[in-house]
Length: 145
Image 1 (tube, helix red, strand yellow):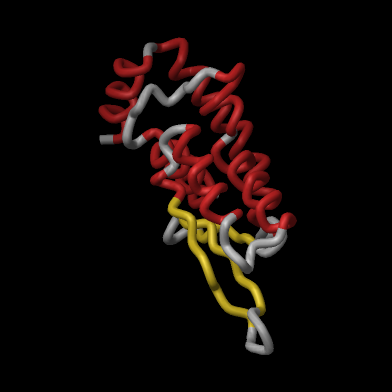
Image 2 (tube, rainbow, N blue to C red):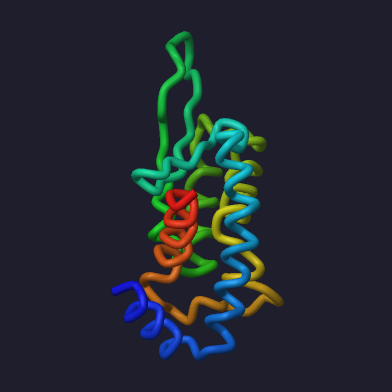
């Protein structure tokens, strides 16, 4: 099954692009593995099971709680990623640090310039499963270890 999927992806992307993406994913995996061991970016953390970026904060005098989730599998274009950043930046609880760490998490997990917007050019070509493929590959690599 995995070989059929790999061959389908190779056919869709072309062998050179597939191999380049595979190499980039392996490099990113190594970096992400270290980040996940640390566990988070500021108040943000990546949940392997749900594949969500989740921010936890103390609001008012209450306890620390999960207050917002970003669905990484919905980040299939640089415009969709920018939309998430804009949404978070408009939240009253979001500090500049929270927004900066969100951008860092996007970059560490999805590889913004390499996979989405290098040279100002949209790289996802409108594929609806683009981010899901990247995240699935990272999670699969981590789970294999």
